[in-house]
Image (cartoon, rainbow over all chains, first blue to last red; front, side):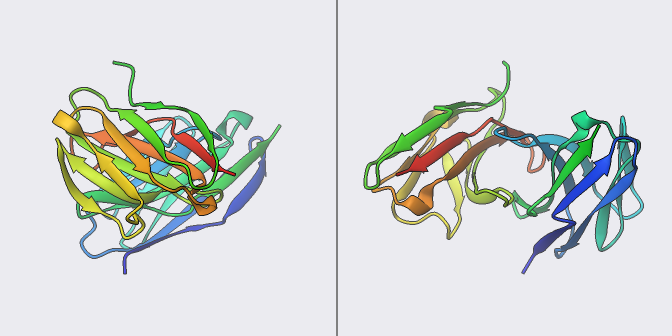
Length: 108
Length: 112
């Protein structure tokens, strides 16, 4: 069965302390891996789509990378406003399947 | 067009009552999805429309749940005889392709 597993479940960092979030996936024939950001009480907000191993995408302090088995979301010198839940998802059939997310808290 | 709109934002209902949620997608998006999200979990797929046709329903969608998308525009999700386990955030998303989802802010349902 297709699965998306994210780790860690929660992460607390000091402002400026860089780190990475992990998303491992098992899906036959990857048709896209997605990263979303979700703030409390709101819907997920699209960040990146990755399609093939070796692909990288960047946006401000975030960089997403993809291998054949996992994806990483690297956060460089984070700020308190980067605090959110980060969701990883994969395309399967005509829909996307989400992991449980990583709750990121950046302390000032 | 300012994005995907969901109403109401919050709904508190007594167990056994029926509730209906509405989703207005981005106008040019022909695909519309409903997801459910509980605390500490990622969104779980419920159902999917392409235009007015409901193409897939999850096993999570029991007989008490029904979704419609008349004329391929807005969509409604109805839950009959609500149970406490139905308490969750119900998210709607729309897209042009299978991957460029735009989510609404969700409807938070509390069943008491």
